[in-house]
Image (cartoon, rainbow, N blue to C red; front, side):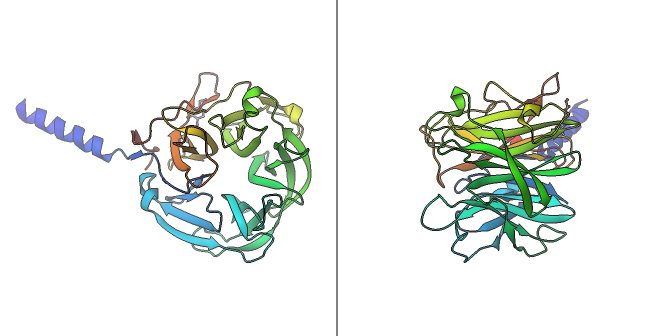
Length: 324
Ligand SMILES: *[C@@H]1O[C@H](CO)[C@@H](O)[C@H](O)[C@H]1NC(C)=O
């Protein structure tokens, strides 16, 4: 019995030590606007650097803290050299692309969405400039795919000082057609400090589709996530085919302020959905490089809708994504 006890205890410890764990933050500084994709054994993390496009990769979330990093794009063109924000790595037609926002050195009035094209592998092939997607002010672009058709969702200014979400059908991975309004800040929690909808990101489960987005001004602790639910049929470019959740779904908690600009990614085994977001320790919010990157597993309610829960205090040891 005694030996059996030792044996079981040893097995228990072995089990505990093989479950991958991690702590937030994954990136303590310059962790704004995070985006993660898991592909072929690696997580690929991108965040806003303001100057270039940089990929970090590792086999575990914890490993991203010290993962190998390389600059994959930097531009001398004065119209898109600077204020480089919100990069996202996406695979379309078996080719990897990075969609990002950039503008000039002088101000933020000329921010546009751009794309660089890579190759069949996100790490092994170089990226080169492939085009500007938005003719007008447009930031935080992301890809939404419904029924095999790709759409570009980005934050737009259909009227001054009223940052909204626009949607356009993609005519190729590097170009879009005309835009339509998908969502505008209409509820009180979307208008704190300034009316803002930005940082959209698609969430899929089976046949169901949502778009997460960030609402309110980033220099407040009310910068937080909202959710649009696709009704399941009809043109995704028609906003009547979407339902906006009346309440925010992920807000400041446990010393994490301005929890927002997230992306969803899938665990290595494909069984879990994860939320990667940024936050700040500054209780009045933050829009600069002080924001850190953090991740949390998405839970699902009995009715099949996502439950993003609440951000845990940084430093809390969490179980990593399944399949690590
Ligand atoms: C999809 O939703 C179901 C609940 O409806 C959940 O059990 C499952 O884990 C979700 N899939 C992913 C990949 O998150």
